[in-house]
Length: 259
Image (cartoon, rainbow, N blue to C red; front, side, top):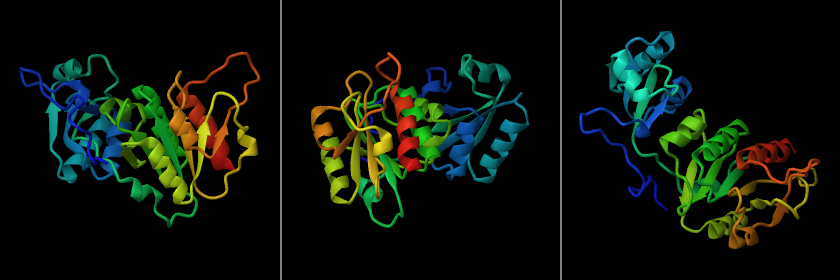
């Protein structure tokens, strides 16, 4: 398992005239605040709009106090960087995201941990939404596969509203094998299925569990589903057959953690 995002994905870079490209930035007050709250280790540089208000200025001072590099940009230059997106006057240039080992997530010692595993979820907005929800419900970590899965990118961090900084994430070569390791460690592995599973109300997990969510459309791959000990399905009283994976994650986490 790699601890850092591999170079096969788009990396941080500058344009030919030295301006910072926006695809390696986490922007907005909440995202930058969470990065600072986590110690700022992932921040290479904080960029601030010279015309920004008290909120960005306060974060910039916090970054300086932490020994981070802060660069104040003229409002026009900052606006060119934002390109109409909600930067809220502040952004953070990021180093590659650091992942943890699976062993750290499944080690004994937590009173009632639960994990979330994603099977090839490729949309950054969905992944970010799931990380935000996982942080809200106190997930001990998130497991993702290395192939055909969006990694923790600046776009994901933005969509998570800082949740990506609160929940450890591990990348695994073989998700089915990782789920079997979770089972061996005492976790109940629960797979989300569009149909054929038990309702969440009939599934109060006893002890630690892993909630496994598949990509929209494809759902769980066969070997991943076979690695689940039980399947759960959200009942639908209406005629619409499916939910956004981020919405489904929220419903299931609420139901399972609530028990």
